[in-house]
Length: 83
Image (tube, rainbow, N blue to C red; front, side):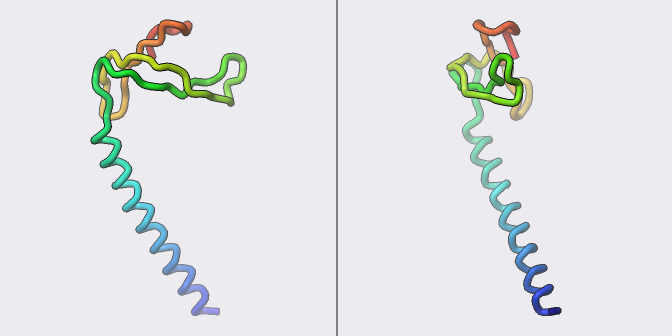
């Protein structure tokens, strides 16, 4: 029984380490592919009348970069012109 607990504990530790490595790799890839002002992007927006469902809409234009991963996007065909 104790050996089973040890194996489970080590497998959880290994899984956590792999998750951490994958997150770092994904962040590095995302930072390299970050959007610039004027680029066209697709947005995942909620469906009108169905807030728990979403679909990709666009392409829309990036107006301004607000942070490392936050952007102001021009959306002329929606109620809010910029998000």
